Amino acid sequence: KNEVEQSPQNLTAQEGEFITINCSYSVGISALHWLQQHPGGGIVSLFMLSSGKKKHGRLIATINIQEKHSSLHITASHPRDSAVYICAVNYGGSQGNLIFGKGTKLSVKP
Amino acid sequence: KAGVTQTPRYLIKTRGQQVTLSCSPISGHRSVSWYQQTPGQGLQFLFEYFSETQRNKGNFPGRFSGRQFSNSRSEMNVSTLELGDSALYLCASSVLRGPSEQYFGPGTRLTVT
Image 1: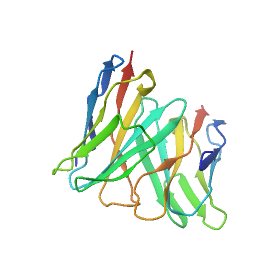
Image 2: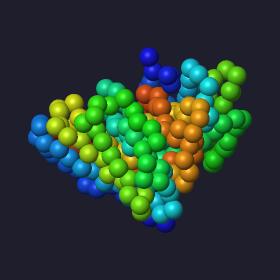
Image 3: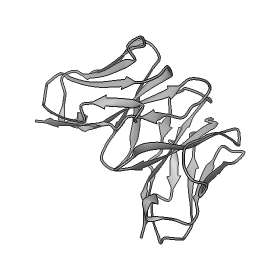
């Protein structure tokens, strides 16, 4: 059983739409990460969260520790946002390694 | 600062051979983690190194090993390659040990024939 669940698996949107990707996890964590992977493989870290909300440009990430749930929002989506978005968590203690969700493949049509 | 670099970028090997992949972290980063990405299993954790010591290991067979040098560069080795080892191998570095933002390299794409 995957300890990090993402939904949806695939998402197609029209340019300009508001997009939400969800992530849930099963046990207590020390941090949650949102990553972006473009075709070709390169992974970029978008956010690291342990509580509350963070915003960077058109991207917003929120986390609800009690509900073990996080969301990534993209406002005014653009075709260049097309990528795979991956949720990952650090579990408790000093472990730095990440446990990953399966990813959400986003395609934004012009 | 230069980003995380991985060499080689692409590699084709035959079953039974062994392979060594290299990762150079961002200058000043002392923690290096390795991950395997396959279409079926997604991203999975292999090892975490900090100050030349393996701090954590994922659920992979003993054919997968690694090490970290005093300059924080890291290598991973896979012996007796199997077809199922074909994957994108990614390393990531961070300043600190423990939960912190990770910076990923471009990956090494290994194909085993």
